[in-house]
Length: 421
Image 1 (tube, rainbow, N blue to C red):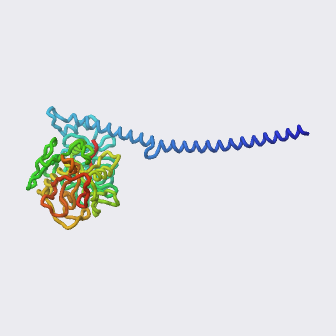
Image 2 (cartoon, rainbow, N blue to C red):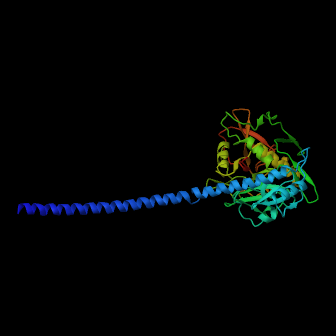
Image 3 (cartoon, rainbow, N blue to C red):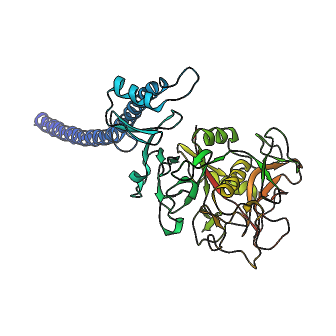
């Protein structure tokens, strides 16, 4: 009997053990399935989605295909230069049709519009190739999904950055040509104005103006004289590559200069900086972003657009002075550099009547920080323009210096944009 009882007990223990093992096996199976599902989800996420491997691979392939098409067009265009380096538009068109089989090439003056392998390109009057469109094709105000070049109604080109659209309405004087001040806007309502560099057409009859990128001084009649780039001005102020004084200099002044010349322009904030709950905005009817140091202004301007193929920065002396030259050559105000007005208090952005070529408040409302540097280490920060209260030397071309810690209600700043080259 004892032996049987022992056997019964042993059998019962075995049954219990089997049940426990079966239970452990089921739990392990469930856990394994859950782990596999998690891994599958992670794998799918890695493969798909905005930053997935497949998505990025498709983007890379698209970029390679587009670049390949652009290079093919550029090669045929390069064959349209004679031994003296002169570009022949008709020869370029002939090469493109004969060697690449491109048909339906259209032109606007000396600019060709080419579609090759599904990509639209502009060949400008100098034989340079851009991905681009004619102005009429962007008037629906859709946001660009990448940087493209636009040809205006007078056959000038300008760069439309990714995430921006062109604004043509009553508030921009219906600007559809570069000389009137092309206005662009991002999806938050921030607006910038294109400042052209180089020779531009100002009508359809062939009248032109040349705006050379540079640092300038302006006499009492508004006549501009270009300053030397490699030495301090008579007021010991300059755009330098590095500073040990603690002030903010341009993010990359050489890149800005190269970009502005290569793309025939750059963007300047349409308004002085606005303050929306400590967020930098560049639009109308905002409280002016004042009581800010020069270094803080640079930090805010640079933080507007990160991870893009274009840069934002605090305005530099090249951008400020060239904008004045642009205004004086393309508006009725030929002495804008010496304009200064009086008032009783600072106004919201866009409230004044200081507007030229769609750029607002360079001559008044608030002084504006720049990335220029003064040679005196005690006052290294340079501001530009005039402010609301009358001052004999306070006008659009004013440049003066002050200490690092200065922040007051009378001083603000203005961002710029340019393509990274």
